[in-house]
Length: 295
Image (tube, rainbow, N blue to C red; front, side, top):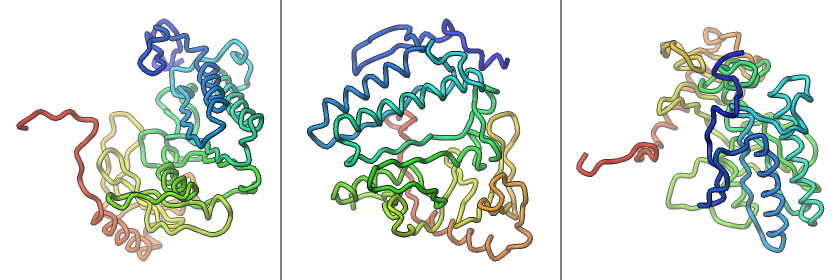
């Protein structure tokens, strides 16, 4: 097994907090999925008399992976599969709590992920299936993740292939709640209620894929142009393309067939959309870098 992915509890001296209160250190990570779920179910029960928002990010399946004894060594996919099956159990508990408290018909539930698999971690990092590459890149294996929306009586079972992202949830929630999206700042998210309810499409001129602060790729409709390419993580350098690579990611989700030479008009269209996008981007101070007075 990849040493980086070796899951040993004693390697991780991570604390567990509830608010500002230290609950446990080191945390027993085999219990995290269950304990988070219990907290979420309790919150739903306590909040049922008023509108509420529950943001419920699990620790797993990000590595290191830990499953409870009830799920350990139960799946055909090893530890990763055990963890995912326990997450499925957790989702079931949350949906049951909504039903039991009479909230299911008035609650939108969205299940998604922040990125694709961490390929460096081998079997414990997950798999993007037929999609190319993984976390850290701007290939589909990093950028395209599952998005499932559930709302009994409002959302009909279907598959939607339009592009949406987690930035859209703020704008969509504001629309559903009868609120106005702030006008004093740029809001990138779109109202995706037409996609959720099957009433229409949304206008999205271009969807840009960044790596850090650099725009690497952009998608317009089914077409995706790569201006810079680089693998997920590793020693390789970015490759800048004078002629961007072009893929039809609806027909070729594995991004195998570069068809840039056949479609110069599509390249021109995407370049124009990217320039329009760049004209709207305003530099803001990084929230991840501390500032020093006078510098």
